[in-house]
Image: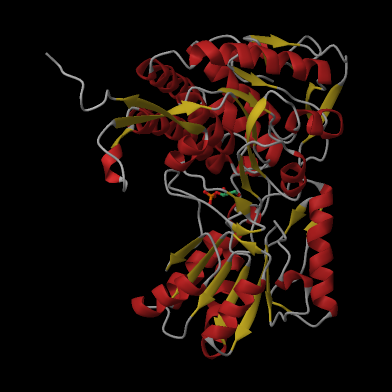
Length: 497
Ligand code: G3P
């Protein structure tokens, strides 16, 4: 089941995956485990340890102590270890990708891409960290009114302590390393709480850091039930920063967390605004890629199309032609549309579809569901009174709203509580820039679907979509604090001879 001999250490005799604490793979004293349900078979596939609050305490204490010497480890050595972990991770891309296929039904090729992209992210972070953490600022006092040149101020970036990373199920490896690597290069310790679906892939990714030889206790991975350890982790006094990606839980965490920096990405209702002069073939291709890849389970998925009524028929026809060609089935066969992550998720999506049906949306395809597998569906003539106009399905179901003016499209986009990304399609760059300025979202893509990557680009949401900004440089900066040392020079009467 481990898929590779190097991973044998991380599973116990009862096939329960161990958690990682103080440099060792351990069984929880709870004697309990949490099952991971394969979204395709809907049967238990793996089990992980149900850790206790006491085990959280032990992890936090080990992390706090390990961080102190890690902060004194030369930057180039920290970078060297990260490069090593990246290489080990990429070397084991096949077995780790296989876990992503089984745990979260990620299509096989996308699963490999996620692991490779994660290795690249770690290496890039090591390089970027060496550059930006290797620099500080030097200020002189007489640049401020009323001051003589009697003080020199030196600033540098120092770590925060223990960073808690909580990634979501849809990118359990990539969105974990996007938090782990910046935290470590900046001299922090890192505690990872992976999502239950995706935990086994995440544990194997953590094993790459173990094999790379990071100091004991510096990186840990704790698994278990949110009800038992969730609040305990996020409110733990030894946690000095939280980086979270996910849903509504993020808002609850931000209310309960202490006076510590928070980095949050909490979803979006990413709008795709299509103008009359748009290249409709390009739009259709991007709607398919943006709306249906990984069955719509991406925060950056296109989640509503706002198209000018004069080109709506032509666009819908082009999109429908492409929807028909999407393959539907198991992730092992690398199908385009695979089962959504859980039964409750499939039920939620179905609820949005039923609501749209009752309120008169046009179904471009027949609605079809088998277990967690939902066939791709384009809903035309959606109106603002339908839930799907506002809520994110996180599934392969995409609403189209026909608009009579660009202003109407911008208004719909800005009326959403979310503000993650958006996109606009037009051949007129001036209009595109003006629309981008008017859209209340963290990023606007011109003539392409929303996307987080490349992973060094800034990535942030406005309104309920998040706090702070991600992307490699921003994450490193966010996980540090500025420290100043001021050299006070003697009075002008001081003689050097
Ligand atoms: O769903 C989270 C978001 O980070 C997706 O990333 O790169 O697929 O746009 P990406």
